[in-house]
Length: 266
Image (cartoon, rainbow, N blue to C red; front, side, top):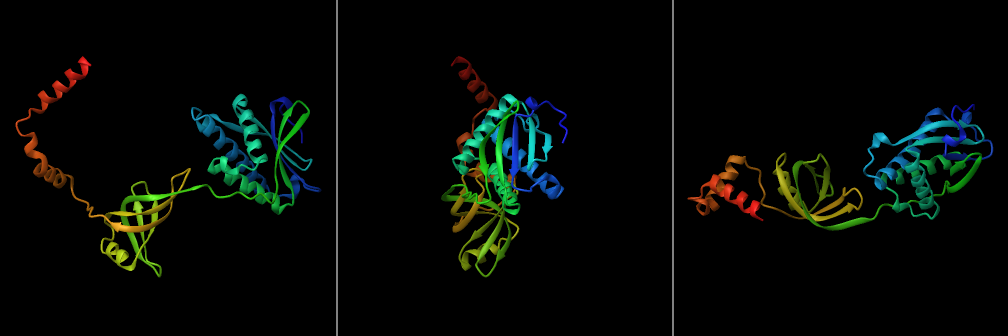
């Protein structure tokens, strides 16, 4: 393939190497999948190392597809940031420290390894200086990526009950951020929560989280809190009944002015 950019403008490459493997022997969408996987791997790693860089400012632009095996050459930007982090990624893969990669990066490596299995090849992560290429790491078909470390503990979640039942009693609860959590419990606990379908509840339980994303992976019910939703005016009314006498005779404006004056003197 004729290259439109100078070799020096294409410092990184992922090359899929096997006898007889050429771009024309692979479906276009599979090559596209590998381009996306490489981009995800690099961008996720750059964002973790350089959180000051927005995702839109990190470019892993395709510069060439070479037909000697399948060579994907990239012209990254900013190269002074991306190339050193690409080397860091390659070293992590070389020493098989996969859990050190971001979650998106681990998923990208799995996809690259899947391609390697299908086409009986290996993916070489390379850097280039002029016409000299250096192979930094290899992703083969037998790559084994362990799951991310898990964290467990006791917590309380609040959300809306949207479903309850099952052969193994469980409840589906939608949290405020839209996440749906499956909560496992006893028949009695699930029946109690079923009676509060489509209301917001508080549930105490033991949870396991993904240590990186903090996604709840597993939740077992210990107990159900007495929490119940109520209109704000009712909540404020209850607060007044409990604590209102402590604030009788207090001028709110004068109190705020005194606080501000004290802050100014400090």
